[in-house]
Length: 227
Image (cartoon, rainbow, N blue to C red; front, side):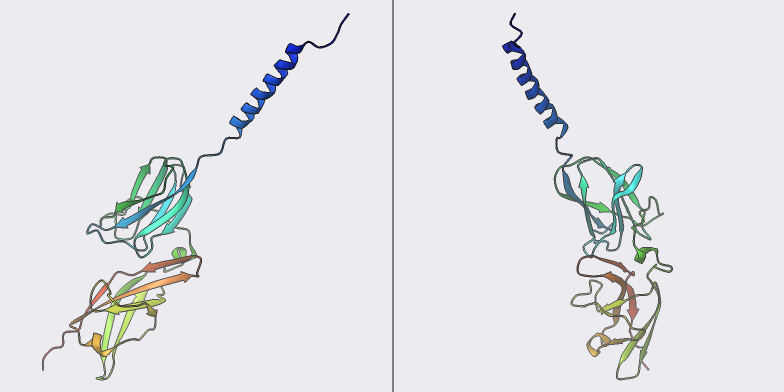
């Protein structure tokens, strides 16, 4: 009696092996693709808002994927998976915004507008800079002194500023950030203006990563009273 294995089981085994390989391929499919998603935060007048807190996450964890501050151009970006997102944007003086974003498999930077009002949803970016005591950067008052040779500004400020800039226009055209000092010298060209604009910032970081906060712009009237 012939007990050899007939051909069809071998064919069946080959088919089964093929099906198993196909099943493994399906089981090891690549995870959802990731892409760069970001926001450009603007105020009601369309001006970029630097230093706004931005969180990218899910309903259960609003900063699961990233939590950061917007840069000078009001932009914050992060690499996120191709899943629906919850995006939260907030800053002091503005009404916070929290929106749902659909899953996307492509890079995108979306404009978001903050308007002044009640706080609303909040995003707390994770950083020692943001969490430090007294971290709110604010110019409470500015004292102006002029000895005839040099004009000096002395800012009463909170939040431990590290830099300042001064200009004759609100856009700070041509003004570079300077290391902060209690006494801020004003050169003769600026001192001749009728008003100056002062802004402080608190900066921490290096070439690979940085965080900064900025104060509101303070307007300093220099109009002299005629004797």
